[in-house]
Length: 149
Image (tube, helix red, strand yellow):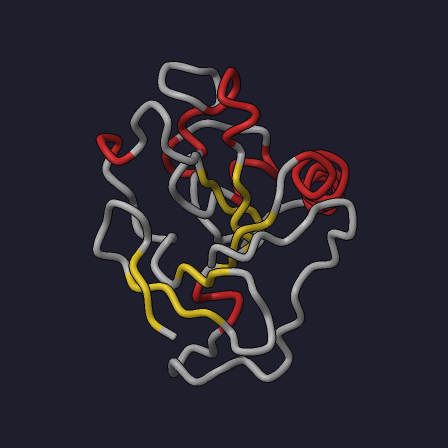
């Protein structure tokens, strides 16, 4: 199935055996004009796209962590950095302490508080664009998966 991300021409694909939308281009910057009042606020960590709308006081326009929104900000989360150079999926060169911090924040903040709405293309596809057969969705039993995707 092929659909568009609400309000933008970004192709999304739904896995036939899994109901979450797969937004394959979240890793590209999304114009800040997309994030308008009443629209969902998405960010990705470790290739997992979270709906952080319920935390808009942290992630909304003008909020302290708004720089993380609309991209995979894994490195920034690991380093606890909002430096634009760190707002990337790339974890090359991170220390053991930063990697541990990343896992702790991923599991105890994002997975615990915010519903997963999809995965970035780096998470579900191989570099050549073929499906990653080792892909497994994250387990998040305390959230109901919405049928609207």
